[in-house]
Amino acid sequence: MSIETYPVPQNEMQRLLSLSELDLDYSEHSEEFKDLAMLAAKVAGTEISLINLIDSYTTWTIANHGLNIQQVPREESLCQHTIMGQPQFEVSDLSLDDRFKDKDFTRAPLSLRYYLGVPINGPEGHQIGSLCVVDTKPKHLSPEKIEMLKIIADQVINRIYTYRTIKDLKDQVKNANDVKNKVAHDIRGPLAGIIGLSNIIVQQGNANELDEVLEFIQLIHKSSKSLLELADEILTEEQQNRKLAQDEMNLNVFKCKLENLYNGQAKNKNINLQIQLKEGDTLSPFPKNKLLQIAGNLISNAIKFTPETGIVKVDLSLKEEAQQYLLDLKISDTGEGITEAALLHLEDGGGSSTAGTCGEKGYGFGLELVQHLVKGLGGTMEVYNVSGSGACFNVSIPFKKKVKE
Image 1 (spheres, rainbow, N blue to C red):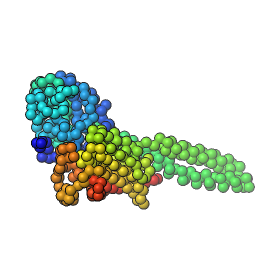
Image 2: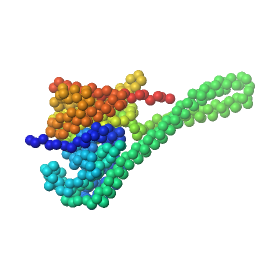
Image 3: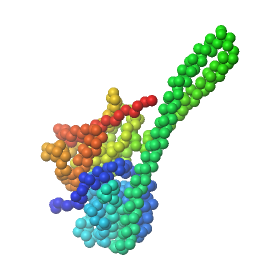
Image 4: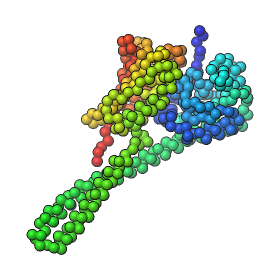
């Protein structure tokens, strides 16, 4: 069997870091970019248009027109050829190209013939994805239409930045609510003291026969008590309406997102993906900063190296310590484990790669990216083999406790 060569950009690690800095949830953007996907198809006159972002293992479709698809393995994606540094990548007839004529997408039922992709450029100009137009008939686009597609691709990344700005503004609103919360807390102490003092004076007032003073103090008592009730009402309302901020998750949400994103990959290979909550308060919020990228790369890697009908387990836990919370991720599989050479490369920060159990391409940068992201969050990652079971990755990430006012 011949060994197939897959394209990997020379700046792959920098490209992945650029994508990870956007800290995207690939399942949340379908409606936000749907109009741009439809516009691209109209401009190109094609049946299909996709907006794709490409990470270490997967091509994620964040918006589509004409083809309902959410993700494909990177090695099966046409768009992996679009991020190799050229202004665009065009194939007039896929059935006549030796690289693609035997692929599943050129056969029925899809029977694709035409492809054109223009890069989506992220921070510092790295090509993090592709806006592509696809058709079942051979064709060729004019330079004018290609330029229009590039403008649409620029709008994709502009919208991503715009939504990040909106998220930041929402966080600022949340911070304003926190200030209101603090004010409510701060006034409770003095008001409780006033009420206590006025109670004492009320109790002694008749003995001193200070009718006017007593009446005045009774008014103070009544007003102070009303303010205290108002403060309690504000606090109760905030607690009842407590929702996760845009940059937060809890264990329940984390589990659901991972199942939504990676169950498809597991089922495609007939692998049993088990995501379990092991320990801790499942409702306590923690920052979601880079967590989907970290867990996602490890899960994709485990699926890649686990044979069909195997098992990939993900254990999530949030442990409370004296000054912090500790988020633990444990990803294990029933594959062949990691070779000693690969373990040494991981320790050295190398980007070596091997093929998966079904011949999947190993891009060699996914685990290196995880190491970088975990270290950036002040966490640790332990990698080892379990005898007769496969590989195991233990990631621990600390989060500071929020100061309670």
